[in-house]
Image (cartoon, rainbow, N blue to C red; front, side, top):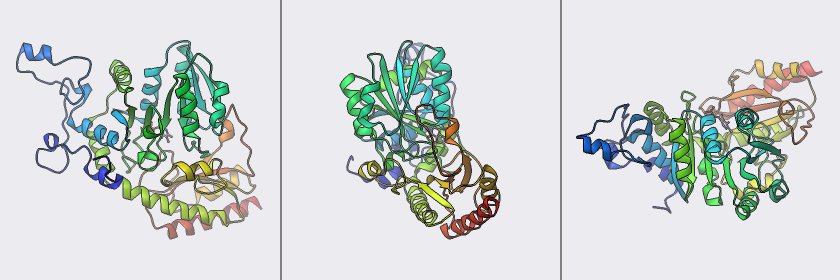
Length: 394
Ligand SMILES: *Cc1c(COP(=O)(O)O)cnc(C)c1O
């Protein structure tokens, strides 16, 4: 089982015969009430762990368990996975499972903005102190750890700016001190970076992105390393977090093609990134597989490949010049979520978010999600966009 290749796993995982009953994919099992045969049966049904056992709709049915099991299988060394109604709910549940008042938390300065908002909002109100750190800190994170540090959060590469973190170095520091580690693995997914095997305690996904893959469902997951599931499960049950069977079913449908989609997203994005790199209107391309990207050597060391999201820095120009580029694009939508089949372009301004590091750049930044269209069409579209940018910039 364990030496199966990832592309085989995404096709086969989670399709237990008792859940599929002879068809290919488990159907949508919707439920709130679960009926018991007798009072004695009802009394025997509860308990702390109802994993893979029908108990009450909130605890899931085979539809959710199937996707959760498949995600667990993609992270060698994992114990189990729980699903959430969004990626943000997954991040919040992992943090609330671990942190208590008086604890300290470390979050990279390049983290997804809603993760920062949670730290600066509810976690702060609960008496949890967050220190934001330079995503390139590596083993230097030891200097930020105190006896109150309970969790180190990672996101690699970072949102918007794609710094690659030294995950093994940070995990080593955490393990020495008994600090819990978690990593938002939405960009790479376990197919390109299986982080539980690298010693991370919780691998978090916004399944909304590549797992679903079709821009039509909100879904999140947390996969726990061996020995870390009970704590997550207790918090998740207490918070009442649950993902709908319909959404989980669409997540499973997306997962079956995730390996081929990721390969196509990755190849097309790298080709477009390399083309952008040759353009005089572009100062830098922040794609982890290119040397411009901070942490590029760590990417080469740790990742099995790249996905389809990256940014580029324009050479000079104003916000208006950048808008001229983006507004006229024919094949790129303008929108936030990504990981679907369609290409997207948005303006991003990391300077607005950062507190631990300074963002300096030659010009404004554009983030691209490269979809499954023919990359030739996307390059022609960007070529015309760069011409519009250059006209406004002067
Ligand atoms: C989109 C995203 C999330 C949040 O996922 P939602 O399902 O939109 O709540 C979390 N982390 C990263 C890195 C993301 O890109």
